[in-house]
Length: 295
Image (cartoon, one colour):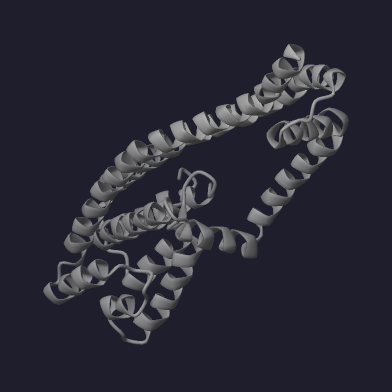
């Protein structure tokens, strides 16, 4: 800035810190002479996104912890407990039930071929990361996110919140509509919706209305296109987009709370089922052993 560059040009030199959304909004504020107001809107947008991101993370944190604990318990049992029981059952010579045979087989594989398992896990982890970094891989994973049975609707609502919140912020900041759509397509956080938005930009450039173009795309809920249509007709597009963003923000909070209430009993059943399977695999043969000793 001291060397003569504008504030937005200076921000553009640090793309890892300041996104295209941030830089272009600041540039619009500089051009329109309303930089303080634009920065205030950006702060509000970033705060809303941060709060929403925290809510989504809190919804998935508990199930992830529970799954990790179950996997750790499985490996601990197979490494430390099952081999000792396998020695005892082998000396008695009784016929083992199916759960016990499966557990002993998994214990044998883990204890004797652990290096293969570690290699496969590392290879899968590296392969997944590389696949996710490719354009095709990231596109397929984003498509999968929207189709997930429980979390898919939540990811869709999150994308609609970001789309309408950014639309309201950039529209109020005086950014041209084609530039708005292009910025949102690159920063909405989902390649599927981003691709739809780029197609939407081309149609708007050809003279078609924003809401009419959105209406042709089933990935956008009807409420979004209907309310944006009202906003276009009344010249209050930014207000309508803000209203939609507020609606989706509340929907996300409700969905997160509902998922939390739903996931907790399901995870309890999942953990109880896992513990039951482990217990049956280890202790079922003991009943047969008692019968043998009584004879």
